[in-house]
Length: 187
Image (cartoon, rainbow, N blue to C red; front, side, top):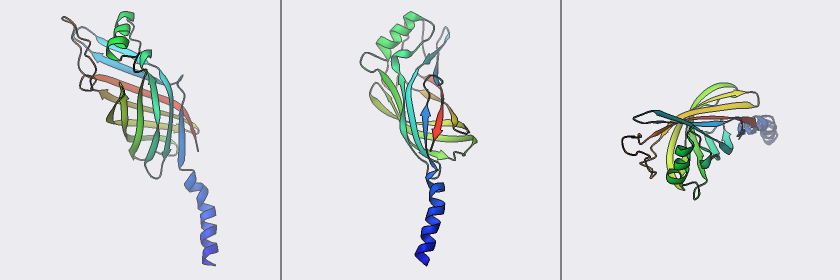
């Protein structure tokens, strides 16, 4: 009799427990990566294209995995010469075509719907070198649609990239990133 009760409880609660594991499929066309680099003469703003992304997460256990991939050579700042130099000399896109972030864990609570704020920790890969990074993320879930937004700083010079400064034009050693991922959530 006891085993029958346990089986009945498992059958009743099993679907609810499984429903906590979800996949966030990123829509690259609706998502964007913005960058901002302060210099002595101007603020350089630009965008990069999200190439792909899929994030698996469990709302009950703070487990998260997957990857978001950005096309390194897609950067546009409104100045073709600057973009060419960024692609060739700084991001070296001929050798390193992508930049990625692979989440490993998160803290906070992801609500089934509405707004949530979490801290996502993972590995940011730039020039094929892994860097630990924690990104504060604001999540909005509306039915099967979701948006994840985060802002963080990439210390690109400390991480081995060249600073584009020349003559009297000086650039800071960090670039601010504003990430918006839009997509669908499925169980």
